[in-house]
Image (cartoon, rainbow, N blue to C red; front, side):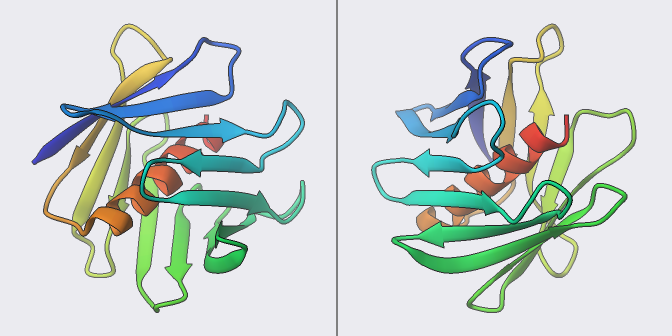
Length: 151
């Protein structure tokens, strides 16, 4: 199992860094206080998350100006992300629990996102099994994006 750490710059910030034992993995930055659009950047991949509107819960995921996935959130906080490859992932948690799990189509937990016990500005991401590097970065970015929106 791989362990990554996420950290919010400060309580008022909408910028997060993700690091592993080899250093910085990537950074997620929202595009302002009134926007739920965000950019994830790393050495290997740059993604853009675009929310369709204030009342809709649909988010498109872009890579190099192409849509590579779509996420839909239900009224109960469960988010399903479908990639253009047909792969589907679910991001979910339990009421009053800041932890969230990212599952594959078979219901296997791929990643577990948790908040620090004494701070809401940092936490850990447990990666449960070997996942191709670009897919892992996509899932880390997507999970952290929806974890922020779910606060």
